[in-house]
Image (cartoon, rainbow, N blue to C red; front, side, top):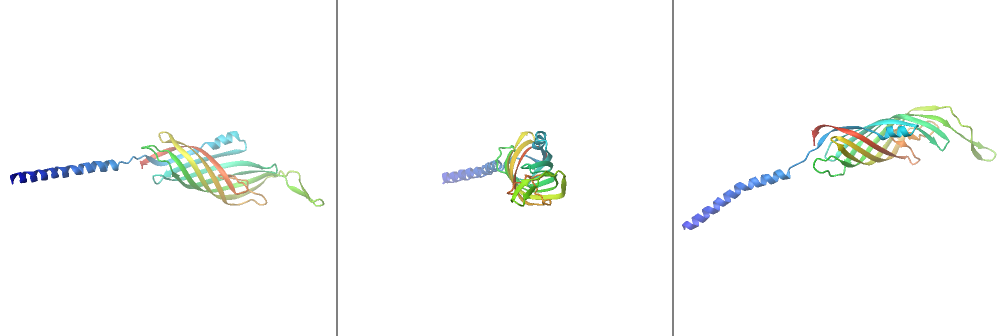
Length: 240
């Protein structure tokens, strides 16, 4: 009988010690499972350095662009680009025109890259809504003249009196892919490619818009392409 009570007492002691140890193990496991690495977050501002490079190589172009983004969720950013461009375009030796003005692009980027620990790199896809307000000057053009007797057309003498159409505008959608890498602490280098679809454009009278700032060359299909190479700096004020 005494042996029975002694055995029962030992079972209770073992069970109590196990119950006291178990919460500690669970707490350790919980702490390990909930460990989260946070990275710097804030406003990231920069410039597109491809534009001054293009201006130095191409005498008929000038422009600049300021870029910025802000992370609102783990992999989601709101982004914007604001700039000015002036471009002179020639169309098959028939016309020469200059477009100049301001533009803005607004949208989002989604980072599809999974960073390790405190890394802050991106492989992103994005969307932009673009709007440009600009003037276009028809510098010169060569009209077609018809021969009423033979029904033929030929080029007449060039007209060199510049005509300027003011307050033109363009709206477009833009889809982009790109890479952004943190090269130094809070300093990022990025490049991206974009495909643009023109939604609407205000044309000058009796002439087609060949170039819209922020959109680039407008093809007959009302589409365009873009390239950006940017350097930006993150101004951190929190961690996410």
